[in-house]
Image (cartoon, rainbow, N blue to C red):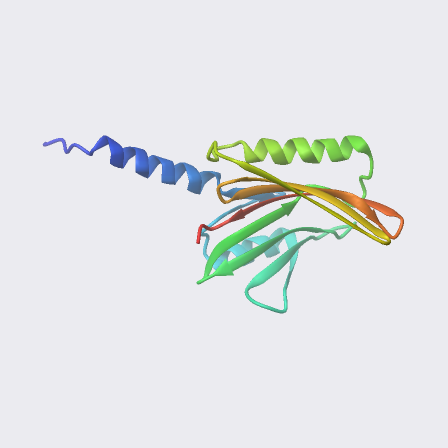
Length: 169
């Protein structure tokens, strides 16, 4: 049997694409979502363990926990019948202490470091208005992002940590 030689640059390109595809995933409980998954099977799998609701525009959905405290745990979006956007909320409404926030930041950043390109950018934003103060930072590594926000709205503190993947355009 003849052995065919594959140019090494092609192997590198194929493996790097595979690495990105395998790492472009987010867990919603025991359900693993990966960019490019087929729409109907993705929604069917999510409905088994979560409540999902569509947005009014486009093929975008909010993923909710199915049991109390019934909180939104993420968003997904489809383009051309394939999963093109995944976002997970790492913060929980029932955990308002510093330790919970620190765990959310650590877990989201650890996820960002798995299999992503090493070139990342960091940007920040400050918004100050009457009854609203908001500070945020976004760390983007290719099409994988972590956004961390903190502030005060009408006297109430809030913190949010989101992780998201988007199909390259």
